[in-house]
Length: 395
Image (tube, rainbow, N blue to C red; front, side):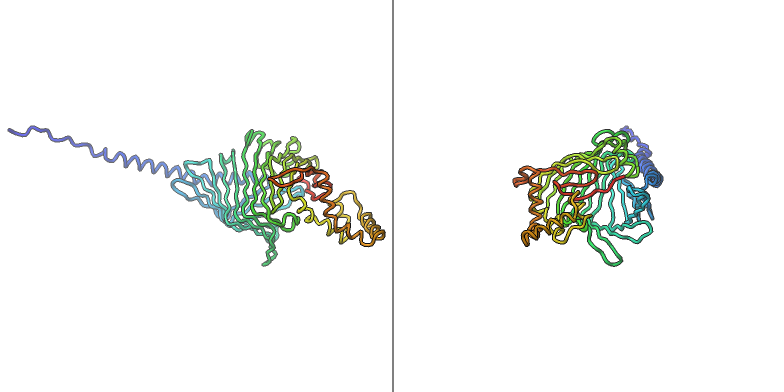
């Protein structure tokens, strides 16, 4: 009997090619999208730089390239520079920072997160002058969350940053730190409409030279602030921004501040604002453990021993005349030989006692402390009765 089993039907071969063809089409479409987006990088970057330049911040890139195909974009800027114009109350100064390379990375599947890496070192110079400072770090990174024209959160971190003043081959240390962090976010409103900014600043193992002896020793600082009074975050020169803040009655609230330097621990909170002259007014309530360790660094005793110039006396004790002070010490020496010198050598103890008298006893992190106000009056900074600094006008 003949075999009546039907022959198996052959499947069309074209079905075997459906998946490879679809993959090829998808790959071609993805490649077209990636290269189109990469071509838009230059357009968007140039438009952003043009907006910044109108506000006095001029960004330049010696060579720009885009890589990272297929799943991310790596925008590399070599021989980068930033020039700041009219960013101070003084007028038309131009200040330029240069660094070797900036690389910005964005993942295709997470386009609202931009991560940037900065290659050290950077040099800082005034207009038309050779570099006057060099900034170095072991790691420099920043991140921005949100669309480029509507950022929601930003951070920048530097590990082992250092700043040196340079004069030819000679470098003089100005600042050092183990780590610096700055974080900010829009807490209320929006970038374009009355934003309220929360910001946090942290320094680990920091020190500053040529500023004040108090800051020369290593310290840690952790500060949280809230800024209100801004109309928007569109690019503007800083003096214009500060005027806007003052006119709107804005202020900076120091939500929390903690500084530690050896056995000295200080916490503070309060509000600062700008007056019509662009100077800082306000008050911080401070609690300090180890205040007696700071007073000797103010240099009161040394100033009295060497004779006090009126300009210096105006800075630390406004209203007191140098000739009156010197006459007082002379009179003390005439009445009781050596008494004037004893008074000078114990000046720091007197200042400490004066600050303690203004404050009240407190406890901070298990240590005896004093609580007192740190006042800002028309830009002058007062620790108790002593003027310890002067902040220049911001516009």
